[in-house]
Length: 174
Ligand SMILES: [Zn+2]
Image (cartoon, rainbow, N blue to C red; front, side, top):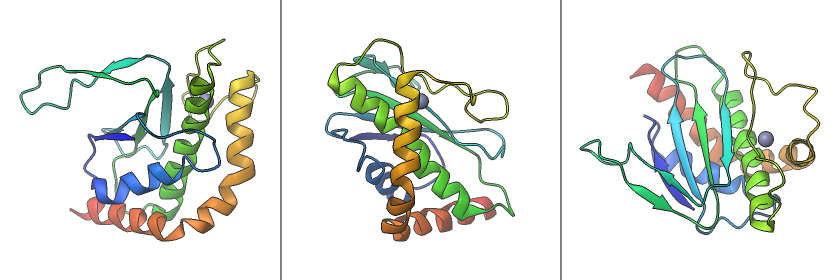
């Protein structure tokens, strides 16, 4: 996993959570590009998007603002997390980040298997929730995998998830 962090959250707190979320999804994390971005506002949703592109522009990676092409054969997903604001349920948000990453890893696994029949975009409506009527097979696979495995994984990885929650809280106060 090649991690690009454009958030104010420390990579030391964020990366282990995103990496651990690959477990049980079947995805190989090697070579997969994961990009974390941040919302400008403290809207509480976490959003993700998986891409089948073999490359992506990582335009924000350079200090001078220049663009750089990053290539990968393992897939690519981005995850957008809310800007930390005070008085939020940090543990809940950290858990949502884990679950969203897990969802995207399922799409990455599909990509690695060569299942490209439809783009695996993680569509969200305005409320930040996935539409309930989304019955595309790749979405159902991702939703079912998270439903089935996230309770045990959240427990198993509670230490790094709590550490992320603490980091989010710290950033909200700074
Ligand atoms: Zn999805």
